[in-house]
Image 1 (spheres, rainbow over the protein chains, first blue to last red):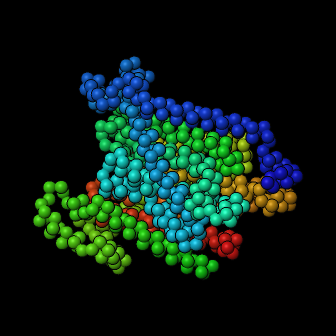
Image 2: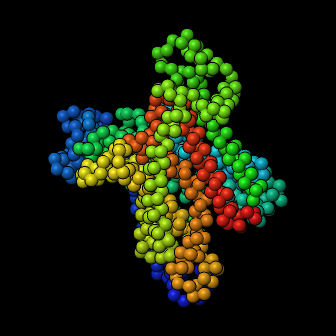
Image 3: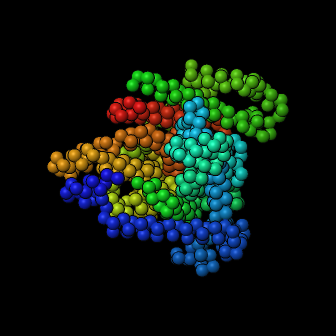
Length: 302
Length: 306
């Protein structure tokens, strides 16, 4: 790169960052990645082993113990670490069970997005011409729709259930993958190994799936990780607006919506589930950034 | 240049048509819109009468063309099922509130994002850059509506400094616009940073330095001006982000704008209003993108040549 050449000009020492700074940044990024990995592992454990991890049944109501504050606040009891909600259900247990919904929706929705988005991107990039125009047009249409309106109307029409929410998020979120896959495919299709495969008269599907796709996997992995975080936030948003997971199933967005009614007095009811969403999205983003640095140093976020 | 604009214009029109089509056919996903529009206890005869009166017994394609014709010729999206007033009027009434909120949020976001992005790029890999990129990462993971609620809890409930909902005075605008700007800030900051990093490596920056210009002049006049070009393109795309953010922010703060109208209408199944909002949002986004593309081609001759 020409950052080296610029060094010849005096007093611009920031142009080429000293290697010490770079190393520091590397360690810092890696550390964030480890934190992210730990958060995600924690979520996975909570989701899989929720009945063992959660101290209470998340559906069990106890009207005598309603609206207890968390134990770190005045009046809180050690029994209910994060307090109880308006019908006396244990907040911590509900947050732990909530990881199930968040992870299920996040991962499944992104899988749908990947399947649709990557295939369209491969075709658009590889064939070019009319195929590319048609697919790019679809992407433009999807980008013209504010996501939230599309997903909300879709859920309103097909009805709010777990499957429908996954479907709505999957069907609205794929254009990101198409855009990235398309650009990368265009770059790769001119490379020697693809030309070789063509010369050997390999079928198009074989070239796309066995020769081009494997080269795109790191990019897709990184994007997919970050998109899981986004899907989790979007699911919680739909639930928050009442168009997502229906009560009494514990979903973070819905807990936040319920807590909102009490925000003037029992503020933690809204704050805690929101913090869970924030923390998990943050952890997944950290992890995504770290993976990006590991698989492709050139793709470093800038 | 002219051919480019014409081509982009046709694309924009096609995108708008496709979106109007999706927003129309969304109603038919559930097989029968009449069942969606009527209360569940409606009698079969009533359903038939309703279908006839709404023209729902005709072929779907004819209905769509009719829908399109009404929009194009009269701006008529039909009447709101709830208030019986024309959907377009309802939408128009709400535009100023959303516009005020959005403008303030964009100003606020850029007032912070531009200096932060420049500093971050110029001081790349230093503590301050690490801090700024870290904040951007945190900001992107923050659920917007939670951030709004936390602001309400802190500034409205605990400190009691600011009103927490409604739209009567300027003070009412402060928390919603901070919330919305927090949504745009990380994205804009990253854009400025990456734009600046690209430009700072260019030869003309070296030349500017070699001429002995002040570093400040190099950064602001030579680097930042060029870094703005990709930003213009992305600003068009950001309209969609902004409108999406407005939907959430307005719901949290009970701000009487388009976003809140959208959520209310979707909840109540008020489809004419939903369709009007979707088409209006799409128009904004498409026109915004179109203007941004033309503007970019205008400022940057390199794009026109392609």
